[in-house]
Image (cartoon, rainbow, N blue to C red):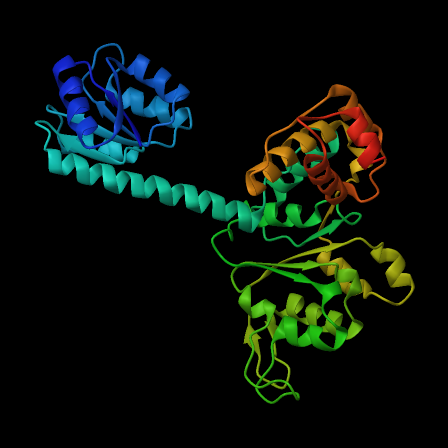
Length: 382
């Protein structure tokens, strides 16, 4: 574990460094705030001790700068001249703790332990959120910029959103980002793949059932709408939902209440519904496969996710992103992609969209040598 000490008093920083080094920590020192910020930008420190009274740049300014830089180290302020007001201000600005001089070894060691526990928790939470909500959408093309703008405008509202696009374009990622940026982000986010649930079970899955309501109903079951109460329900591939289930979904959207299968009791629910489909729902309405009134309820906002062939300029960014992600997950060695190999990937037609591209990148990482060449692409992709 690395620790940084920022203090203009040589005796303080050197003695603190010796004490912490004896405890097994790797310690760096900085004689002023400017040097300290520069070091924190280049190195990864678990804990930063920072004096408040320093020339040129005092400790509170250092703290503000570290926060502005996005440094996620735990910052502990130290001072022999501060009062409770200063301590409170530092905590408000992002400091983990405040310690008065003369420094007490036991207090310092306890603070370091608590600080590192917090930093670990923050990292674990960030990783968990990535697993739950997915990554940011990768790309700088005009279609992706437009979707980001739409998400920023729509996410804070409770408007229902219909997300349309071909398979593998990342419709579920748009839904996750809408939830993550909404006022419901701390509440449940529940996904339902309507195409993967048999039509005879979809009502039970969505609305729940009472014990004994059908042969295999051995106990009461809360449906996805109840599970998502207060949060967001994402109905993926809603174009594959049966007409009977569509009628019940419409009722929930209109009345904000539902009844479980086998029960006449109404249950109030507060759910924001996001839906996605790879079908043309207007054509499905004409065929009698989808309810027009439900379509209008769901499509307050429509977000169209482009195919990968419509955003080819994003392919190099996506390839580099997938290389980093796959190597991190599998422990494979990072590989570079030759420019002519990347050109071939950009020129290829991607009927399977983002999903196909990720699979291809994984295949190339497994089968190629120290770098991914044009020959590799021709042999294993084209």
